Image (tube, rainbow, N blue to C red; front, side, top):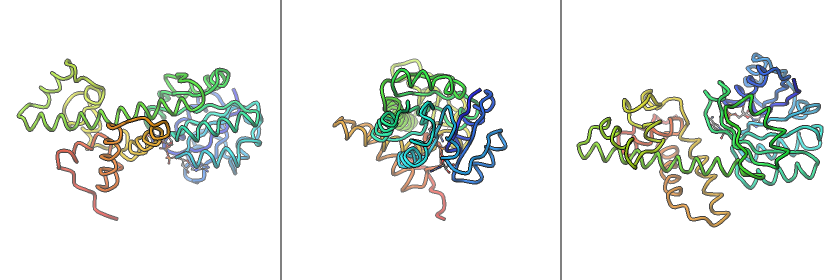
Length: 301
Ligand code: NAD
């Protein structure tokens, strides 16, 4: 059993902290939102009055926060110099590669080991303890973080040095976003050319067009295995989060002067769908409704 501080108990962090409790750890939790804190307490965490209080005698600190600026704020104001330097620092948030590298550098200078460990898998996987962690950091930091991550996930992969976890995450999601758009426009075209969608699925699944966005996550209702498309695109991976990841990918691409035309097209299309057309809370495969022109924007307000 170890003393773990958990900061950021939202949709993802709530379930992850509960799984650390189930694994026998003593989890001290902090979130700015009272409702998130109360839920964590109900799941067996001990409530802290501040992030600083949560980390004060921790052996591991886990954070699951919205974006880079929240991670910078929390680490610089409440973790570095406040947690014992023996604590392993694990940031599971999806943030920009540059901030991840900067914070790991600052932690190292202050005497800590730290990793970036973003996840693949949504809220259901966070609750079930079946996330995939992509981890960036030095070998010793990875080994120190691994036992905690294994209690929250089904796979823990060392991607490379500081920031490599974030790089792997946004590259994967850029590929996913672009391949989902390609899958959607392909099915719309196939139907307009008179092909039955299930028949086309059966053919393309065994031909060279095969890809995860089609065979495991088909955006067409009633075709392939059950997916969010069969539940009016509820649940799954929100289009707003896909857009967040595509923006991080474009920012990273610009920083290393990498040409990403398909990623840029996907970012533009998801901006239109999630923001201009109000589809942000739908699963990201719902973008097919923008492509086939059947999307009805939710009423304003
Ligand atoms: P969320 O908004 O539900 O939770 C974030 C929590 O952080 C909130 O409860 C908020 O109150 C808290 N918070 C913000 N600033 C804080 C601070 N300074 N101190 C303490 N708590 C603070 O978000 P989420 O869906 O849980 O996502 C968290 C991260 O995981 C994001 O980076 C997201 O991109 C990533 N992610 C989400 C999913 C998903 O399906 N939701 C999947 C993969 C990765």
